[in-house]
Length: 471
Image (tube, rainbow, N blue to C red; front, side):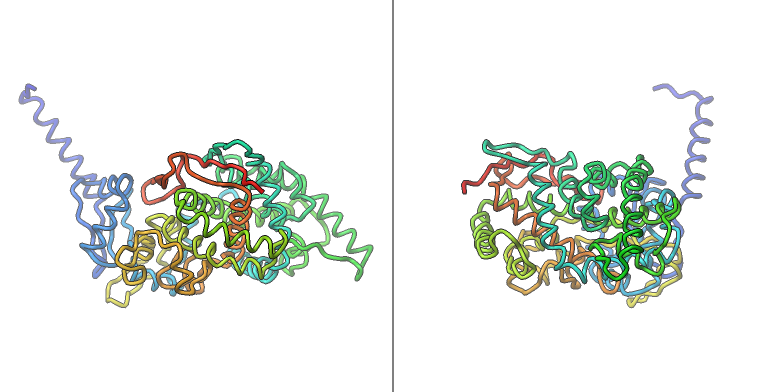
C-alpha cells in the first residue's frame, strides 16, 4: 500500500480523534475504588470479552483482581460483586435493585404504576399475604391448571414426540396456573388472557395490547363482584385470587370500576407476571433438560413421584409436595447450576459506600452480582463445584426455597424474592406430573449445551422427546 505525504496528516488527525474520544470516554475512578481490570482496546474496553467469553473472562478477573473488581463494558464502569462482597450489597439499603431496573430495563415507561415508589412495597405485601400465606389453598387448583396446560401443549405421546422448547411452551404451561391465581378461575379459562400472560415477557412491543386484552375480560368480572358484594353483604363469598385481594385492600379497593382503575389493576397484575412467568418457565425448562440428560437419575426420581402419587391418589396436598425430597433437591441443584454468570438485574449505589474491605463504591455505580462465583464455591460444594450434585440439598437439609450465602438464586436477606415458595411449588408440581406421565429424554441422549448470550444463560434449543409412560 502506497502512502504519500498528503495522506500522513489524515492518519494523524484520525489518531488524534480516536485519542480524544478515548480520553472523553475513559473510565475515571474515584479514590480507593475496586481495581479496574486492564484492557487493551480503547473505548471498547471489556465489551467483547463480556459478550463472547463472559464465564471465562469473569473467572480470570476474579482470580487476578479479587472481590470486588471493576470492568468497562458498553462505555460504562460496572462493579462486579463476588462471593464476598455480594452479601454486603444485599444487606444494605444503599444498593437499590428498583432504581437499577428503571435504568437498565425501563418497563416503567409503559407500565406507569412502576413509577410510584409505593408499588414495590405493595407488590411484596401482596405476594406475601396472597401467594405465600395462602399457598396451601392454591395447591389443588395449581395442579389442575398445570395438567390442562400439559395436555394442551404436550398431549398424547403414544409415539415419541420431539417438543421444541424455544417456542414459549413452558411460558404457556406456567401462565395458566398464574392466571388462575392472579385474576381468578373465571378469566383463567379464557385462552386470550392465558396467551397474553404467556407472551407478555417475550413480546414487549405489544405490551399495551396485552393490557387491553386483560382489561376487556377483567372489567365485567370486577363489576359483577362489586354488585354481588352489594346485594349479598355478609353472605358474599370472596373468590381466592389476587384481584379479590386488591379489591379489599385499602390502597387498591374501589366501589366503581373506572378506566383508570382498570389500568392500575392490570398494570399491577402484569408486574407480577413479569416477575413470575419468565423466570419460572426458564427454571422448569432447565430442570427438565437436566433430568432428561441424566438417565442414571430417572428411576430414582420417578419412583419417588410414583410412590407419592399412589399415596395421594393423584391429588397432591402440601404435605405430599413436602415429601418430594429427592425432586426438591434435584430442582435446587438445577437452579444452582443453571443460572447466568451474573444476576440479570443489577443494583444501583444510591450514595457513596465504603465496603468492609475498605474499598469505596461511588454514588450512581451499577453493581452486578457474580452468581457463578457464589454458586461454584468449592468450600460449599466440594472440590468440583461445577459438577451437578443432585442430592446435595437433601444430604445437607437445604430445600430449594432456602436462601443462604452460597445459594443466591432468589437473592438474599430482606431483599430475597418473596414469591420463591410459590415458584418452587409450581416447578415441583409441574415436574411431578410430567415425570409421572412421560419418559423424557434429549435427542442426543446426553446433556444438551445451554445457550450463552454474554453473561446470561438460557435453556438448550435441542428440544425434548416425550413418550407416554405405560400405565
